[in-house]
Amino acid sequence: MAIVTSSSAGTAAASAQPIQIVRPKAAKPVPVQRWSVAEIEALFALPFPELLHRAQLVHREHFDPTEVELATLLSIKTGGCPEDCGYCPQSVHYDTGVDATKMMEVDAVREAAIAAKGAGATRFCMGAAWRAPKDRDVEKVADLIREVKSLGLEACCTLGMLNEDQAVTLKEAGLDYYNHNLDTAPETYGKIISTRDYQDRLDTLKHVRNAGMSVCCGGIVGMGESRTERAGLVAQIANLEPYPESVPINELVQVEGTPLHGTDKLDPFEFVRTIAVARITMPKARVRLSAGRQQMGEGIQALCFLAGANSIFYGDKLLTTGNPEVDRDRELLERLGLHSRHVMG
Ligand code: SAM
Ligand code: DTB
Ligand code: SF4
Image (cartoon, rainbow, N blue to C red; front, top):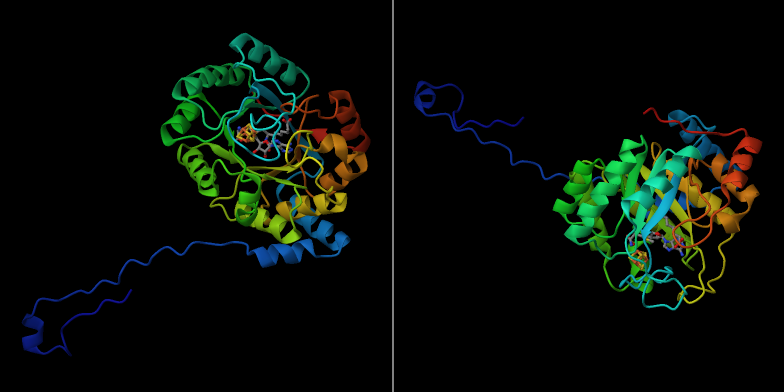
């Protein structure tokens, strides 16, 4: 450490002077940017076998590559959402045939959670079509979380934007994970959503972290974005400090009535590449194959597992759209020699 004194070469006069210590200014923390967009684009551009090999090496360093986490989703409050997310069938801005419902009662949620556990899920994720919950909604969700936790399941919620106090209330109810996606790269965001901005999402993620919960944060591909924009989305998520424990990668489910219906379909290998790049840039995260599995086919899903995906949404329905049937998924895992994750409790 640089300590400078005013005394010069030990003279008697100088030693009588009070020593003046000049402390160095506290260094400003330099934000750590683990991955640049260019580095991530370079990963995307690797030959397919090379990319998958690298992803597998990283995957095996941190996980059993034959283990897949099963997370079941339940829409506890469907439709009627005031936001205008261009991909979403639950927005009031689009005519998609999704009817708005009230929030589900505790008994019905308990039944769904028991069924999910019985089918082998270890995580139960409750989603609500809100821009942001009201405090009284958060209190009701806290009751649901206590029910889910009493069954020994991990609990996750996705309820829209949260303030600091709401995040603490959910944490105190026992919530393990909060899902809030960045969804796109910052430069793409304005083309898809106009009713809230990127910083709002980052703020919610900060509140979730500060409350001590694990973060589940991912995005959607197949919305007509370029590869650079996909790399930009992965960079944003991977550079969160720390990066999320769970990373759901969704392929756009095109729903008639939404502005993104009719978008050119993404090359399925590009989806696999996105999984591999997420694995390499976030080595310890659970990378979840999320929306879009029903349209994807089993061969592509198998490649995604080879690329480092180790979690799926499991159950016949996502929130409002379909998902592969439970029996089909169990059979697929068995055919691939994969097994589901178990948690104690
Ligand atoms: N309303 C809350 C919010 O937006 O934060 C929570 C529920 S919202 C449906 C959760 C996520 O679902 C979105 O952020 C988006 O990533 C995903 N999603 C919604 N519609 C989708 C679609 N058609 N295809 C793929 N993913 C979709
Ligand atoms: C996430 O990343 N994907 C899930 C979950 N988190 C909440 C939702 C997918 C929704 C797909 C469209 C629907 O079923 O409405
Ligand atoms: Fe509402 Fe969430 Fe759908 Fe956006 S993604 S319209 S916030 S339910």
